[in-house]
Length: 352
Image (cartoon, rainbow, N blue to C red; front, side, top):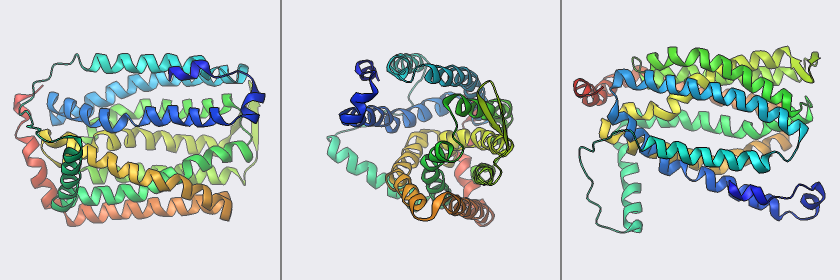
């Protein structure tokens, strides 16, 4: 992120020399490649520090606080980008430093490891063992396999439309930075209000059933974005373009975000014992990366081939399929799921 400090502030340089485009992409590739390292470790770390009943509740509280700060930053950053298109050259490096500090602060939480893994091989053999463990988890835990199948359908829908929606904002609705920041803050407000409720709910409900709410909310979000193309009426206030259909889509996104934030980050940890939380989240991230390789490109290809509307329709259909599959799995494999969760329930009494 600090590399962005050295980016030029002259638009002509970006037009004639594309090297900065590649450096920009590499910066964020480096940023996101840390996720497979940090997120499983954080899941294992927190799942062992807190009981099953308190894990979702406390995680939702911390997420709500984070969303409040994010809401303020999104508003200020959106406004600043309209004033100065190159504000990212000093804002992003500052955020990179804050992210580093947050990891340091996480390490200050007390954690006593129950078992210390005996690692004898090198990185290649360890990677091979990790892949073997991945397939073993998916093969032996049918409920978790179903969970990830549902997420594959959802993930393709989400990732394939993410870039397309940004293009839609720019090409069809002609939104400026401030307007986009406004809609993001609306969903943040909705998410902040709902996160404590869903944080309590996820600890009392089968994760597959819980995730259905997220999938359907995402479908509603995409549906009302698609409708905004055929409902061009809007009003402007403080240089913000306010569409009624976009407001409705943003409310659905707030519902989606408050449920998916919990389901994606900690949902997988409920399918095994506390000591397996890191392994299950690693599998989850691996499969996210697999669909991340193809889904965004497929989304752009679909948009160029059949346009915005039908790309959105395909994504909504995939989300409905994901919801139905989760419902089918929950109905047909409930006994196994309860058995799998029993290990973590027996350890609650010894934790916070």
